[in-house]
Amino acid sequence: MKYRVRVTHEAEGHISSIERYIAEDSPENARRWRVRLRDRLRSLKDFPERHEIAYRASEVGHDVRHTFFGVYRILYTAERDSVVILGVRHGARRPLTAEDVRRMLPPK
Image 1 (cartoon, rainbow, N blue to C red):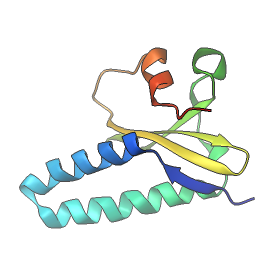
Image 2: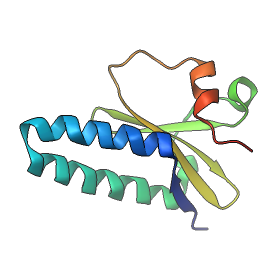
Image 3: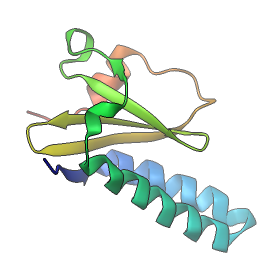
């Protein structure tokens, strides 16, 4: 089954911020990073359950999975026929609490 991949506004903000940061040193690297990240996000349309659960539904309301793209952690949920990208964060940032993740989830 193929899933539809949707990126939340918050995750789009994360991506744009990271891209701007990379572009300060190299606009070309920033462009390449974004293209490769988009490819990685699209790859989640096939078997998104292959990545481990970072936050259980009992903690945050949905099983939230994660995968890495270089030093960046991609948080997402997989439901019925869609994958929802919740956020993209540098792996060295402080870990998110369950409350942080609940705030990232789109309304039901």
